[in-house]
Length: 308
Image (cartoon, rainbow, N blue to C red; front, side, top):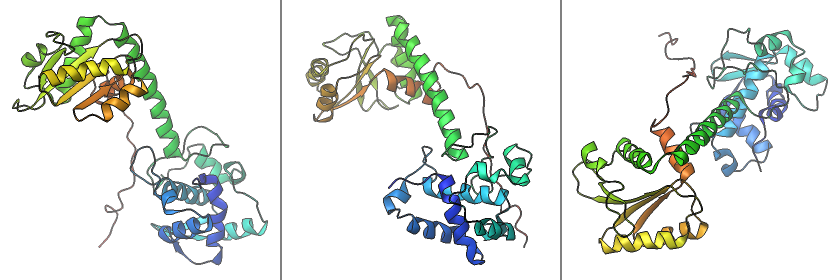
């Protein structure tokens, strides 16, 4: 089953703490996963950042919200217990705990408005400034979603510019990208590599490593329609004619499913890079883009506060 949103985890978490004992986050995650019937595969699902499991992140944010409302308290890092307010709240048998429900508490309203001086100790991301009381996503997930959206917009703009550039500019762009990715022994060699040979479907040759021990054969084409299997077969035939083992086909458009299937099932290693992937590489290697803003997401350094 899918990992429940963090608001759906808040009531089970408060009920878990209702025995009055102190509990660790490790114990809470195990108990809640069992109660919710989550498999190991469910629990292993990662956030888009790849740095934390989605379930762990949502459990941590459920605890943070309950603490900000005064229903839970942490006597020390990683440990929590229910408060008198939490017991009273459960006594009224709530069917679900939501952000909207927690806004009845002044401390929680201050937290949502950004007036709290405390930070999210488990996951290092402050609560979002917006008052979206219906979201199923944690602040970490909202931040990742905003980043992905901005990146997608820039990638789309980049691709539009690349498709509109001249063939000569596109050739230089490919050279610049390959150099940033670590290919080619130097710019002088790479500058002669692309768009010069036109030899039976091969646009250029560039060194795969700094020593020039392996050659990489390239076709780089601005393309209007979908690149089909025949074009890839032609490129592969040209590679065989050169006794080449590796090739890269770069286009500003897209590849058909048949073209990709063919490239994936031949002995010669051929990498296909379509327009969308080209734009993503340009973003990854900072080609044609500049950094507009940098936001640092911080967490408390517990080692600093450890008193011996």
